[in-house]
Amino acid sequence: MYPTPFNEFLIVKSELDETYAITILDVMGKVIFSELNFDKEITLSTAHLAAGTYIVNLRSKSGIHTEYVIKL
Image (cartoon, rainbow, N blue to C red; front, side, top):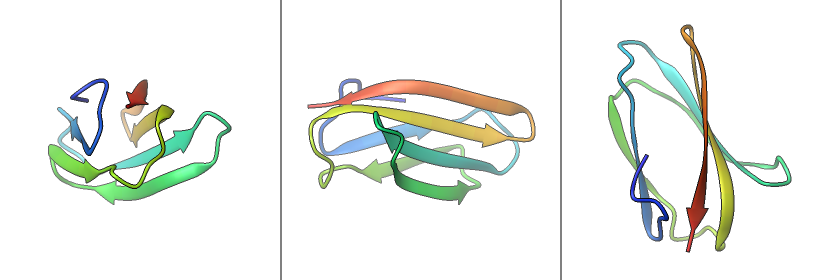
């Protein structure tokens, strides 16, 4: 995921050859964004998010990948 920290957008790249779910949560665990994705790279508009730390989960049949990201 990049850029980090991010501001207006966040790019998520996956090396998976399968459908995966992307979920963004705030630090309190509230789901901010969630969708199924088929693309290896997506650009998420994040202009509406407040500055702070967010948790990004990628879930697929292969497992779960979690990263913490910071919005300026």
